Image 1 (cartoon, rainbow, N blue to C red):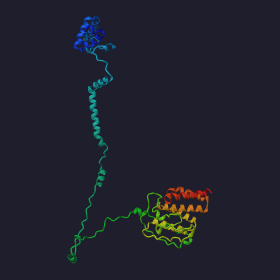
Image 2 (image 1 turned 30 degrees about the vertical axis):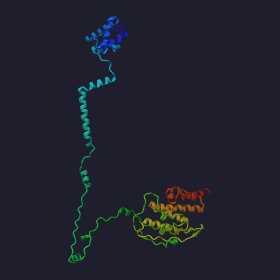
Image 3 (image 1 turned 60 degrees about the horizontal axis):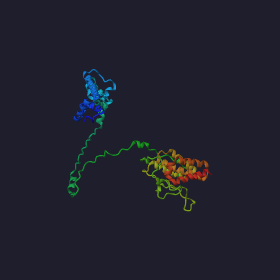
Image 4 (image 1 turned 60 degrees about the vertical axis):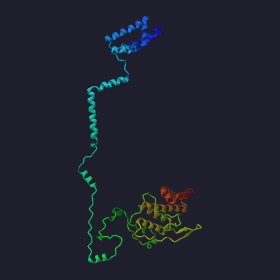
Length: 384
């Protein structure tokens, strides 16, 4: 046993011996080696002297790194604490701060102030209930209307005898009451009535030889037919022909657009009879009647210049976007026809500019293919 333990093993065990951590067999070996080795015995004596110094508390703090290798029992007897870690320092400072009375009273005061703020915050956003608010809330309450009591009609003796003589039917008898006037009739909208405009006088637009043929017709003020989408006419099939000079057979006869010359099957231009003044009833809206009269006036005029001036006047005067779009459509046809027939480059440029300015509406009314064909014809006239 003694021969197995050397000085290096003894030095390892000396710390465990002072801390009372050796097992019984190790303690026996340690003591046997201590009896036979003088150097190890002197080292143990030095440690024991340090223990005596620690008990007398001569040194208040460890002198540098020398004490790092001391056994824990010696450090505890000296009353020293090992170098603490940063987390341990923070925790110790927080605990020391918490146990101070000033900090605890400050925390209690802060919690009380925060609770008062959260308790009074909802009341700060509420408006004060003044007299106007009370009147407004009372006005919003539904008022129960009293139902009128309808007295029954007193029947004379003859009517009572007739009722008794009539055979009984399967349906239950109906009580005869006075017929009161209906209080739920619709009221006319004054604003829409004020917006209606009188039918304009189109005699100034007629040629002189046709002034006597036109008889004025009175148009009633009815609801104006408009559409929300600007420059989109409705209904397109009633007013717009499929081709420039050919009548749309599917459209109504009142709205057919005829020209003095139309293309027959062979392609030659043959004169046809012009349309008569359309019959405008009292149910026709004023804006629609005005459009039909202008359309009829345009059919009576022979020259393209007159047609162009009439449509220009109609477009500048008309406020309804639907019928104004129809005027733009017809003016575009007149401008393109005038430019292609006269082969005038300046007129073709003006017509092309007009087509580009109203491209959205004209593409919708003519279609993509027809619109592109008109543009190409005008470009050919300009490039000649």
